[in-house]
Structure formats: C-alpha cells, structure tokens
Image (cartoon, one colour):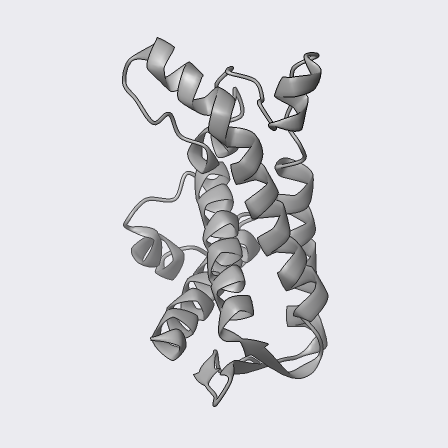
Length: 173
C-alpha cells in the first residue's frame, strides 16, 4: 500500500503496488475519455487557433471541470469559446503523464511531472466527487458506510486520492 509522496532531490517519489497502479491508470483513462477534444469551428483560422464551442457542458462532471468564468451567459460563452480547447489539452496532457509514469514499485517524478500528477488527481477527485455527490462530510459518511454498500469502493478510492494529493502537495512544497 502506498505511503504517499515524498520529496526527493529532483522532485518526488512514491511507491505503488499493482492494484494501485491499475486504479491510477484506469482513472487517468477515465479523464482522457471525459475531456476528449471539444468541437471546433469549421473556419480554418478558428480551428488553427483552437477556437472551440461556446456551449456549456451538460454533463455535471464536465461542468465542474470547466466551470463558467462569468455569471453573464454571453460573456461565459465567449470566454469558453477561446479557452476550453486549451484547457482540455492541458487536462489530457496531465492525465497522460499519470498514465505513463504510474508503475509498480518506486516512481521518481520530476517537479514538473509531480505538478501534472497534482492537477490530474484534482481532476479525478472533482469528477468522482461530482458523480458521487460528495460533500464536506465525506469522512463521516465513509465512517458510517457499510463495506457492502455499492458506493463504498468509490468512496474509499476518493479518500485515497485525497491522501495522495495531500502528500504530493506537501512533498512538492
């Protein structure tokens, strides 16, 4: 079982067993599938500039990952049009770093890779938290949840990811 992240001379280290690596890769794949490239304009210049859709996501998890920047719908749509494609690219790149560096045994990440992990873990936690309707009372809910509750594995995974993210933040700073 992972003891979390620890600082190293070049970044951070952590140790994972096969089950943990499988979970991490699966969650990275989930994010890769969820934030696949958004639609772009038919205009060649807009496609070259990664101008995307101005439509707010209907999926609650995507709405959490890509929240509206403005209360005004028109301003929010315009901002989304020019930023979401780049944000999606960044989230995919971060998830890909996790996918590629999560291996059984000790992993050594550079500080840059550690920051990518931190962002990817945050994306996974936001997605799971939205899907599970997790509140700030998650620890109390988990403590009172029977292990045969079908939500139990997901809640335990969420809690483990919170721990990993916390140790990673502490190790990087």
